[in-house]
Length: 232
Image (cartoon, rainbow, N blue to C red; front, side, top):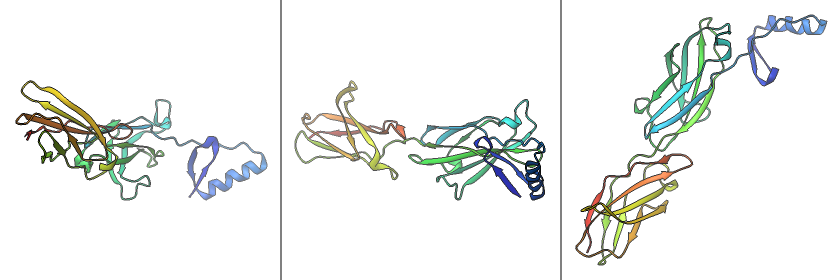
């Protein structure tokens, strides 16, 4: 089987060698050639909606639309963490589905890039081309907040970096008086998992919380649970 391509920049339907020879003969003799059906692909969109959840949507390829000559039997979706789709997991959906939700059941992890592609499987046992895209999963809660104190009125606030892309995150830090939820201090640090604050009132109780963010990829994470401490 030979795949003829190049017309209008899109791939053509696979041709058996005998049909390809016949097509070339027609061209050489100036005889009118039969029309060749173009293979299209679904347009695929994907967006993370939570640290381990993403929504994927796709549309119907041209040849299976209302005026097309193909009928969708099912949809095939591949999910991978690399653009070559090596080791991809494949999922099948009914013909009337045009979206799905991926989550931890499909192995999604927070702060990670994924690639997804979708194709239509037709009732005549052919298929469309793949439509593909990629998405970044969001940042989860920052964990293991702790405080180190050695000087009066000073505290070093610390937290764990996420296992993946921890150095690529900016961390927003807020310090509160929880008695009236008054914001005492706010700052941001890039790629570091600690921040030293000064000017604290000895014997006063404070609460701090942290969130990670990377606006170009992973968005803004949720605030951590607050950590309390009493200033020296």
